[in-house]
Image 1 (cartoon, helix red, strand yellow):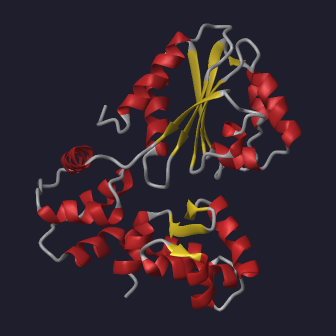
Image 2 (image 1 turned 180 degrees about the vertical axis):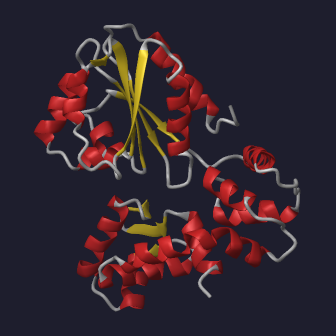
Image 3 (image 1 turned 120 degrees about the vertical axis):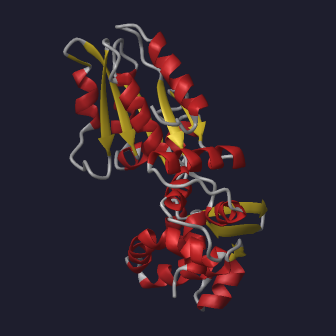
Length: 299
């Protein structure tokens, strides 16, 4: 097995699953992290390990690529071939957002039955379904919040990826500078590890590393409604947090038009809102790698 990123969470979830008995009420888990932070890799590594357990039947679900997936029906399956069902659901928040309150509370009651499936889900947002006191899944899931990797973790992952691909090691200072710009995440390490050399300038290294994402980022922005696109591109272009008054002035839109756009962008996990005071809220782009792409790769 290769290097496990976020191994403390990986180990803790495996210990929790190991404590479950055949008919126990399940402990479920929800892993929050921005894009590129290693949520899917963590699920896949858990899937590989749980597949070795004789008493467990792990099932991986990609919510985006499996739009017909019926969570309630699957939970009612309970066990498969007399094995305890473990559902590893990528983007669980997307499924939950599509359900009404009645359906959510029904799911909660199903999960509180003996022998019900164990859910290990991921999402880009910590949605109110898990945090509000009267919400359906309050206290039903153990919550984990993925952070950026440390410098040591980033370099270790980068070097392991280079070794696996048979590429020469490179301890250039420019690697650390690039990680500072695009984020110390598993995705950043993966993109950088594929480069043949690091002899060029920082801007050239970042441009080459992020080139596979160029079409993806352009389409994500282009498919936004025009007014929302103007708002988002302005925030993106600043490379820092901005105020509503800044957006209003730059885009020549009213606060009444901009506020719903900001709410929509935040709900999609595209921007972060930071409340500095009762009357001062700042807005910034959530994806650090996207900010680096806009800065270095648009020419």
